Length: 115
Length: 111
Image (cartoon, rainbow over the protein chains, first blue to last red):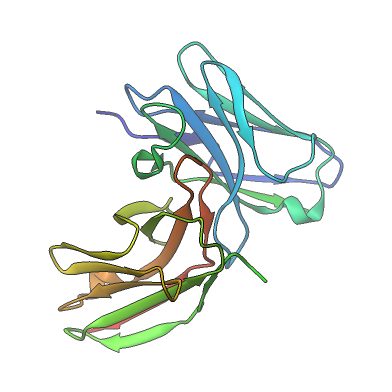
């Protein structure tokens, strides 16, 4: 069974640029959630995708957007990068949407640095 | 005020000691409580979850929830150096998939 994978591992961008982060969900999982984890903080929920549609969103501006593909993999796109976007971006997959808090499996994350 | 408060530590204890990690929360609507462990440069992994008040034990780990005082705890018995990590508590409402997280406590087990 393949776990959740994310790419790239590290990324350095400059303010104002755009970035795309990728996530492959665990085999058999059709739901993907994205989190932002600033240094020394707990993860903050960005949004969740289920059946290729956004299935809930946290308190993040529209410049954070996402996609889910038919194979359940997902992308997180961030436009007009700001310095405060520097963080670890975590992807978590789960077998079904909603409520199954205890079945979210996390990837290793992408460390984004905005200069 | 944050919805979930957790002392960031670091908490340093000798190998073999009993470790107590704690969180407090403010919203009485929270029903499910989780503890995650996060090693450096890794994503969080679920250790324990409990529903409502009570205790749950799994090996060396015991999770405890006291809803009357809005206090959740994780106890680690016979702590090992491999337990050194950041421990995050998280909670959610009954049908709400969105997890609300504490900031995490960095735990160091000294050999």
